[in-house]
Amino acid sequence: MSADPLNSAGPPQRASSVGRAALDGDRSEPVEVRRSARRRRTVSAYRESDRTVVLIPARMTAEEERRWVRVMLEKLAAQEERRMLDDEDLLRRAHELSGRYFGGRARPESVRWVTNQNARWGSCTPALGTIRLSHRLQGMPEYVIDYVLLHELAHLLVPGHGPGFWELLERYPRTERARGFLEGVVAAERLPHSPCPSRD
Image 1 (cartoon, rainbow, N blue to C red):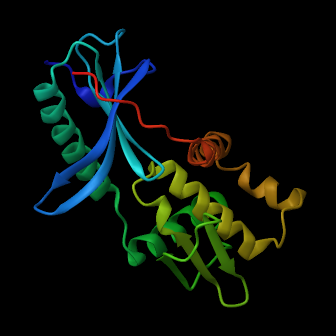
Image 2: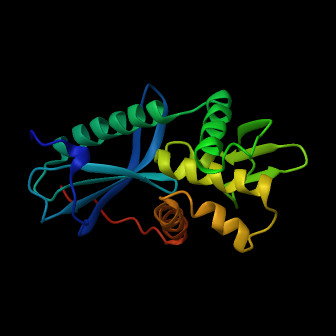
Image 3: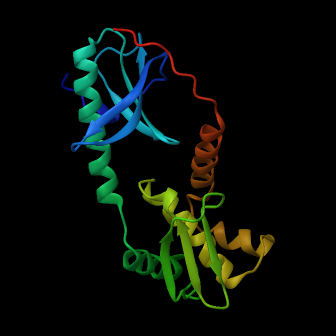
């Protein structure tokens, strides 16, 4: 299997198993493996709500499945670690985005990750110049995090979601794409997950 597993495409056809993959001793995470007859050589993986979905060819053996699940979990973890920004990085990025799209007019005093925002992606307090981003964004594509940062930066300039607010956000060329990504995440979280028996 020489193809890069993360650069494959094609929707899965059926789920094969749901379980927990152990990594680093006793730490584990839920994993769903979906087998597809249309896949020949490629393997891919992505995060979906509270689990990781691994897409594999239907012909794989149970041993190959276990090996590829471990490989893909390690690849995803490495990608997410590279994407991870700390609070200082977030503040620096916010100032860069403000300069690029808002002429530097939005000047946050602080930007930080928080773990108590599960119903929204970000929030801000204009009077204090503070911005908070949900930890659920961690590991998402950079353009999505940038969009949420710009959304909150725009609120430092324009309260509410009137025409002036959206006019500001339209300056960011990936606004619609980022919104679509986040809407997809929310929709996926609402889908019921029904475990299927393992197919070896």
